[in-house]
Amino acid sequence: MAADCVFCSIVAGATPADLVLDEPDVVAFLDARPVFKGHVLLVPRAHVVTLLDLPGVLRDPFLEAAQRLARAVVEGLGAQGSFVAMNNVVSQSVAHLHLHVVPRTKGDGLRGFFWPRTRYADGEAASYADRLRTSVRKS
Image (cartoon, rainbow, N blue to C red; front, side, top):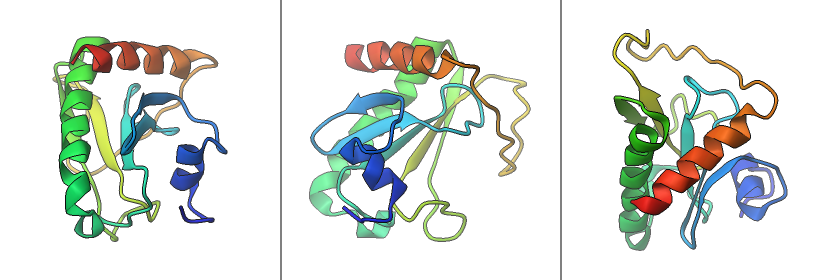
């Protein structure tokens, strides 16, 4: 855990987040400023800065969780597909490895790497997190 890392704080439960997945090696939660509603961030529990730093023992749990989340945005939210991405150092807003799983629908307006952001209405994030949690459990 890194004392000044917001993702470590979320993993520790000190900073509130709408959790979607809470497992021994990984945690996933809704992005506070989603590209589209249901945008999930997957992080390893351990403070790892980039993909290059991810220990081999965490590769399978991390990627397996990413697959389940990509399926969950389709099955749980009715998306047609997903955009899955991560930055390493450049454009990495938090220096803790995180993988974005963004629900996609044909014609949703997402173009290239310009990511417009939206906001959840009061109580709406909890509903999205619940739908995703239910779907990811089924996977």
